[in-house]
Amino acid sequence: MSQPAQVTARPNVRVVLFGLMIAMMLAMLDNMIVSTALPRIVFEFGGADHFTWVVTAYVLGTTVSTPIWGKLGDLYGRKTVFLTAVVVFLIGSALCGMSGSGFFGGVDTGMIELIAFRAVQGLGAGGLMVGVMAIIGDLVPPRERGRYQGMIAGIMAIAMVAGPLVGGFITDNLSWRWAFYVNLPLGGVALLVLATTMHLPKYRTEHKIDWLGAALLSVGITAIVLVTTWGGNQYDWASPQIVGLAALALVALVAFGLVERRAPEPILPLGLFANRNFALISVIGFLLGFAMFGAMNFLPLYQQTVQGASATNSGLLLLPLMFGMLVVSLVVGRAITKTGRYRAFPIVGGVVMTAGMGLLTQLDLGTSKTVSSLYMVVLGVGMGFLMQTSMLIAQNSVEQKDLGAASGAATFFRSIGGSFGVSLFGAIFANRLADSPAGPAFASGGGGEGGAMNLDKLKELSGPVREVVLGALSDAISHVFFWAVFFTVAVPVLAWFIKEVPLRSSNDAPPADATPEDQAEAALGKAPVA
Image (cartoon, rainbow, N blue to C red; front, side, top):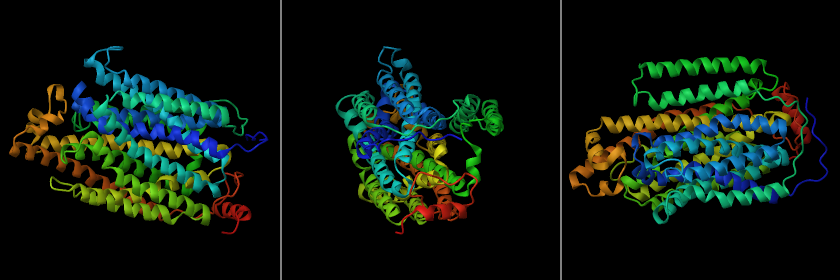
């Protein structure tokens, strides 16, 4: 078993937290920043049938790299690995901004370049998100962690509104390319702060990476995302391409499970799932990512097309959702720190988030901005109960030596849910729109050459045709939220079975094979009475 090296001084948590917040802001910002810029990017490059891949490539890169970054941090030290992830992210950001500029190729290859470079950016982002959570786990014991993770959740909420807002403002006033270039100075500040102020405990372990497991996991996840993206859209469900991808995914994931059982240092330790709380919260994280990242990417599209908002204003219109999420995240974080209790929060969050998704199914051509804002507040409140509570429960379920792997697994399942959500909901949206009476009208009147989405041309359509086209768009978008409800409704049901294991007040965990009762006794022996 690895033993922690002696730490001579406690680092300045507030200064380190500042750098971590910038890093988390970058990762979350670029998860959302492209949403309001997408219509302009598609108009410039064409390829409306591939526009969801600009989001999917980023989320997929994040998903497949998250458990790898988590395990690398456990083995080689979180500081070096985390700073490397920041550098990879910044390189990807610079390349995204250069897509289609002529440096690599012309406009004809711009969309392909952007998708590829978004994947590189996502690879770095996976290390940022899991690294932030694991580093906080190193610095702060579980009992105090709720307050700090509440702050991180607040930053995530701010980033989720700043992403569409900044992306829209830059798109309207500069160029969509600066939506990626803006990461460079911010990332430079984060690198400087963390390189000079972050001092973490070191863990001595055997340096052996499960590269075979990582490769099999990446192949399996990528194949599943391709199935959900192309199935029933680009290829028939029974086509050789889809059947072949499904078979590849099955073989790769079965082989991954077999490899992980034998690997000395598994990339995703299957033993973690023997803990009921960890297994439940992993599934909840998957459903949360599925609904949140999958459905939320369609809100700016609804606002810019059906409600006629500019790219900047569509970012502002997301403020109610982020405000609800921000306030509740901070309140929940403080409540957990004060009481040490957390079980009720994912249950309440699941119920409220499902209600919010249900309300968004009512979006149509006549829905006012005020009404849609109220719907988004409800969704944001539900997400606020869940965002960091899920990570806290996952981390409290494992020993300190497995903290990186646990944080990586929790982030992985949320990210993979987002990957599936974006691709599946994109296919649902495209199919619903193509089957609507306005399908041909949209292709000829609402689009441009190469399938580009021309918002200005949409506004120039004659009254009756425009109403048909926008009605079809609103119907397709509300249909996405309708399907999201089927996933969110399972969250409170699963959360009901989570056990209330008291949070530890130190980073010394009970043995991995300890029963929940043993864990509770160990925790109660150290935890102050609330």
